[in-house]
Length: 508
Image (cartoon, rainbow, N blue to C red):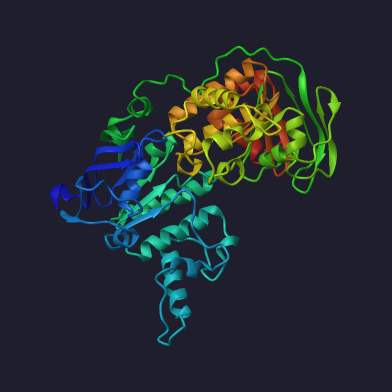
């Protein structure tokens, strides 16, 4: 085995109709190594790993894959498993209505020796042994749907271990986890590393890369930029490799915003998950909403936008009370909403970029039976260019875009409505540094143009650096609203104080 590499992907190329997405890529990893795989959305990370996992095939007569120094063919998922390759995708693929042990053994069920019957007792024993080995508090007889996202990810790891995986690929594994759950995941990764399992770790969160990785491979536009040990790198050098240029203070909002009058006022809002929510939002302001998972931030946004019913309270726009019973009412009131889950709530994945981008503004270019194609194309071109959406054409299905470009389509859909108030729920989750930078700049530009922005984010730096004021929530209540002056000098620890349920007077 050359240089003790367990896996070597050499001179890998991949071409889709009309586009070459991987160009002569080399990727090598040793057992017991944690390798971060980084790059902007569309750089080729997922494509490379799908070739490794047997989901895609490399171009014919192109490159080779070596396992322990011997060339192998990986033509399907079963081939990948045979060579110890397991991929944990960003979207967890478990059967929620089945038990933990059913999921762990799915496709590898144990026969009881009688036709048509399974050896449930032995599967429970083996599954529980794997779970206990990882020191995860799970009863494998419970249904997966009753478990947290973090524990569901542990089940994915258990499936990989049952298949005797030697290389485990983790694609954005922390995107839906709390800080405590992230720390638990990192403990498990260290155990896997100590047991000689190689981890390929795909993430856009820079702090995680330095916490967990031994080395970093960076791709850009389908090209290999380089592989370096983590000791050779810092934030700026990784960003420079990813985007081809330095992004100084890429998250910082230094703009002087012209804050106007109150355009949205929420008074004593209550429903099953919210308790007495009151706040104001002004024109040209970026109002940040911080809090831990389950604090009520998304529920507040959904109530304002008419998705979740309100039991009591008032919503005023420009000083006048409005009744918002559904999304149509919200849009008519000048509100746009980029939801937290772009795939489930923000996009029609099986339809085109063109369809998704214009679905909220059909009345702009359709009059009766007449479609003004010129006007439609003007709208599409404006936002494709403004957000630098990477695509083959506007007829491309959204499901085939990278996560970052999918997010840009969702944002574009709502920008096209010219909203007075725009709610952004985790607008940069799971997207790369370059795409984040573009969205940060866009948020600031919208505020400068007088749009009132309500920004929900789990990234403390994002909230602190972009917000004019910050609302902190805990268990369905507002614990603190920081003034502009307080926001300018607030630290992450201060926000976490409120987010953990402490009162403002305790901090003082």
